[in-house]
Length: 146
Image (cartoon, rainbow, N blue to C red; front, side):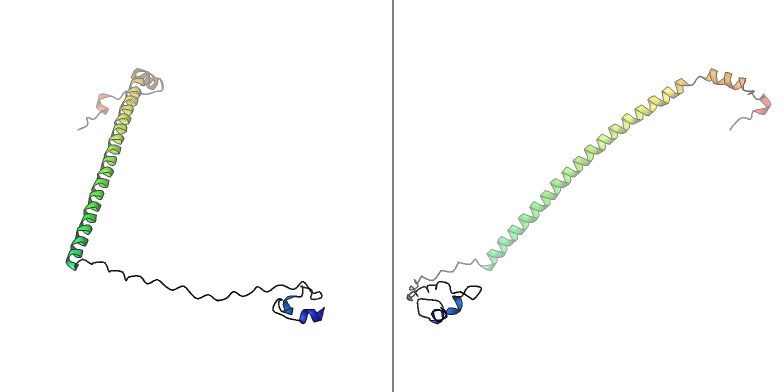
């Protein structure tokens, strides 16, 4: 078997590739694929040279660049103006909303102050003070305020 493995002809692989992983047995010899005959490369098709693009004179190119740049600048300014107007109108509506809430709160405060003033009974306060030992001052004890 070892002799068969050492033999090499054109139809089998070299003997080093024939042994299995264990190295103790010989597997079936593998066939070597036949070589293809070399074929001459295809001739390249010659194409006509490309025409160069006609370039514009530098002055026209600069003028177009100036137009495009100014259009972009004007568009940016218009966008900024519109966006600013939107922000101003939103702020104005928010301010009006806060003002109306403020007026409603002021009316509520006035109503509560009026309820507080109406709930106080001055005669009841005077009676309670007199019962607890309060006395009115004499006219000589009162000093007029300037």
